[in-house]
Length: 213
Image 1 (cartoon, helix red, strand yellow):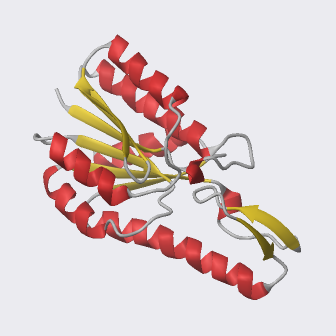
Image 2: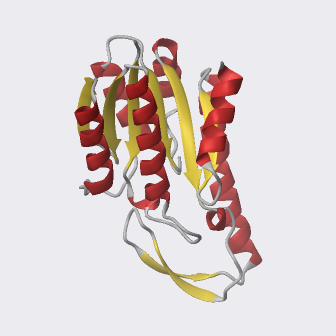
């Protein structure tokens, strides 16, 4: 009997999708899959929804009705904030989980400043980061002058996507965040899974657990 804690990023950047699904829809599906698998093992499951603060905490419990409550919150919850603070969420989890837990952090990890917290949390808990991303985010297409909106700040801006420098700066920003995530988790002894929204997350999860097993 184990305790599984799902930590799910509900910030604005999760509302992005260009292929078939938004990132937050895939995150919800992965969290639901993990919840049902934990129920079959008779494990307790808890949920933390976070933005730049902890938006919702459901303490770990067993049972089908509890899992259905978790899934309902994942589908219906309307976050108060659009910003992201992963360190804050990890600190909260550490403070409420006194015993060792299996922790899954589901996010696009477009954030930083959580490396130190990650190191502390990983000493006590078995942590895995599940990065959900859309292939269109990885580089900026050349579309001329485009009005863009930052999903976390609501700021509107005109961006010249024809500029090679603008596209290179965006790629650097994006890759820096991804590398920070991979280094923070790997150096802390935590696991990482990358799930692109148009790929099968089931294969990714099974492959990961086989390697870990």
